[in-house]
Length: 195
Image (cartoon, rainbow, N blue to C red; front, side, top):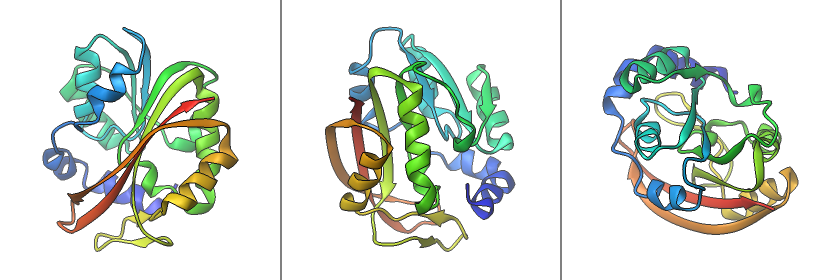
């Protein structure tokens, strides 16, 4: 985990939570791929907007965020426990039908992403589904707020995922969003199934 990025979210948890956008339009499609009432791990849950939808739909949700301050805010908003957990602390084995990681793994240092993806692969049950979104680019860097990004290309992501375990790609699409620092970002959304 990049310490500077984690400190940003710890120090700005309230303002980030208040800024948080509506749940992703891709969430419903993701949930439709899971068994009814299935078990979901959300990484980097932020203010808990996605977990709120999952819980309302009857899923069993383990919501986590790397910032204890953010986890506390999300827990209060959800009325549901949210764990303070970094990605490198994930040690579950075949425990989840789905993992949802919206705009959070993009902060993992490039040389650490494969090991985090391997942890996610291990945590998924056979044929389980994994969604993640990344800011597109070439090579890593920081935004105007000092947050680290791994700025992924599709080719680099394909190779990094492949090195972490066998996956089947279900969908890959792109869009442009406005970031917290008010700059546009080209996003890549990837849904894969554990092979």
